[in-house]
Length: 92
Image 1 (cartoon, rainbow, N blue to C red):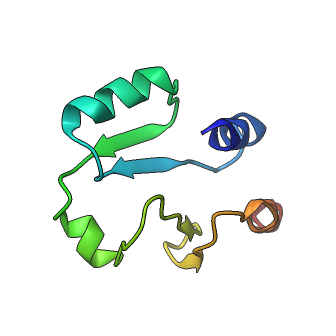
Image 2: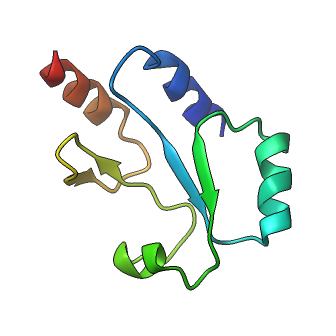
């Protein structure tokens, strides 16, 4: 979570957003986690059999997708800092 928080801060004035979808815990655990980890980005909870899980073929947690401005998945790595920087540079 600290790394995600740093990304939010680093790109706060850019066309960048993190959207978290929690499907692993109970809704109550999800709400407690938001507070505990001071989540400042868009976040939602769905049950484990959600349409998003099936659509994006989520098999493990956490799963990360980097999506460009056209809605195309450009990376599925959890360490895509350089890719984010490249996409934001190409937007300027």
